[in-house]
Length: 295
Image 1 (cartoon, rainbow, N blue to C red):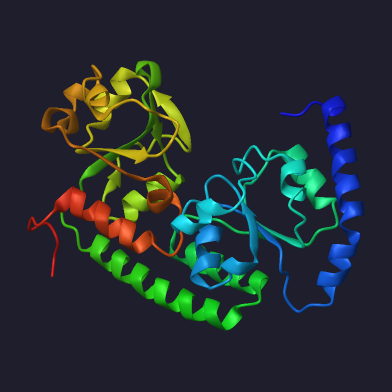
Image 2 (image 1 turned 90 degrees about the vertical axis):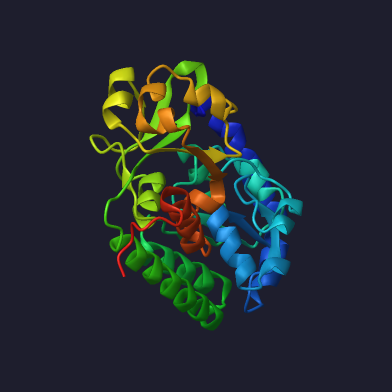
């Protein structure tokens, strides 16, 4: 977090940058579409590319890694730890940010910069994904293309929901965000992990709290997951073997069966255009070809 004294020079730098860019903004105001856009949030960036607006993007946050070409854009930092100087230094004439970006001090400076800012709502269900697509498309001036994409994605999500509803005996999934230092940090209710597990026809093994919290060994054993799910490409670099040999996880059905799987973080938790595919992949990990789904 920035302290108040540290924020003042940041605000001054931001103000100087905005003043220096006033002529750029005046020129862009004469155009129907912003031509220098900063995108913040991996799923927002993915939607922008799906709508063919990539030529107007000038920078992205560090979670914006799909498609691969997005990684070639300048990186302005992690979505929740942004520097306003970094955001403003690329001379944007629009900023499109996923809900939850931060920290609050940086958000305040960016909001006061005078640069058009569109905040895209986030969520962990089908309506939220569809709204995210439509809101991003509107910000980009691609409403018709956005509606086509929204309808395509919604149909795939509806199919995924139907498949999940048909599962007879749902398996329990423990999403492990981190196992660093032997402490299991797991996903509870209301998390993106909880949402994708549900969409895949599984049950979150942790339901007695919201968000991400550390679990005691007793809580891990009581959760009795059938599958341990991890995020690839995150900050936790512990190996699957280490997680499986954790004294509590080793006593669970997943630990005894060696059932641990990992998926790319943005693909798994982004809740964007590819979420239905991610749910199908997770369902295949859970149920494979067994006869656990109704007709």
